[in-house]
Length: 563
Image (cartoon, one colour):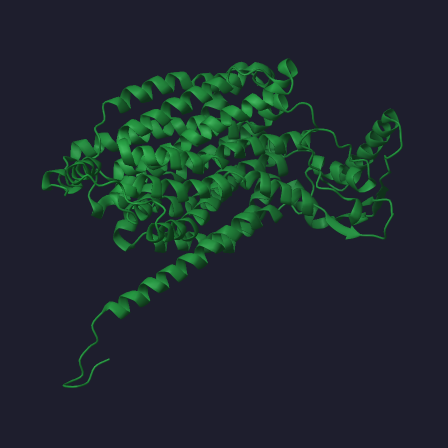
């Protein structure tokens, strides 16, 4: 039984402040470690996947980023059980050390040009370690704070943990931008990109020093003491009742939140750089500004959830995302690259080809040659970052690209000598580039034409949706589960969502764009998950409302009459 002295409501305010600061700072640094890879995906692709074409290399880099997310549920289970059995503090100290060492390793790994295939394999291994550590870190830090604060202020205090993800991303972008500026773009592309990873050693030492001074949570100590007295083991995490709660947490809270958060804070950056062709330094600066502006709203919505409820805020964000993501990304294109938006509006680009000979343009091992006329035409359009409409033609027809009034036939590369294929590719590429230029399609966004204020405003609105979902989330999850199962039960649904839905979002959305030729088609991935959470959450709320109505005593209408 928890004693009065150990209840969160009775903990001194100073201890709560130190607890929130210690858990939050450590988690910021761990998110920094994790997001460095995402913010430098293009550079990493060039060093570790240099044996394939640019498009495949970039997708492979995104998939390697996703690998770290894919194993997060396993890390959630392993470290969750550890946290539920031996304590919160010891567990998130362990995850911090693993994360720091793995990130430092990325900074010293040789590239593919030095050690061949071993380079991407080592990189994937390091990402696996990072993912395992991150799977245990978030739940530990969030629960540590929640079990120190009063229940009626849980949304407010735990929202500071939610700030850490954005703060870590901002820190990674700021350090990356500063490094680019100090060493120059050429040096950054060759060796300077390693410096932000090496900096994690300093952050690791500082984080360990700060967290070592923290105390175990009073709720866990009371639960552990009671278990020792009664000799009872922890109840089953995967028992029927608890499993149902985890499924509700996953589909009714976490997958929609994850899709919105990663779309707003990651896919928007990828979209600006790879689709709208904004210079990476400019894109990272604008994203950082929008993140800084939106970050205080994690706390605002966490505080508001203490007043009006957690789930209603999260479901409202899911509804708004489903309704307005397409519009917001269209406006992002207009603001960031008005020439591209105008040309796309005025000139239709059509790829006419036999669909049976059009592939996904994805080659993980670098062996496919993509020699059909459709693949050759499609690859050229993908390289230019141009959206197009597909038109199926008769079987065996040679593909052609129509740009405005100009029809540019592709060629069949099968059976040709390599030098002949290369020469024809160059000629076809030059013809496509020339036609695009004549129709007003820019090769990249003109920095002088970018409406920076509008870009930041659109990015801010996207991030505001993320804060609506993420700010109240910890409190909503914590309140579902008992202390003895809490670390594992919170960590598993959260990390399944962030690992499998969020981690694969950039690669999946980018692949959808490539497959369809529509630069906005990738948004259906997050929209689908936002709708899933909205529907599940509404059904969940309706069921609880009906259950409460049935539990209330029927009102009396006089002797012998009642409902």
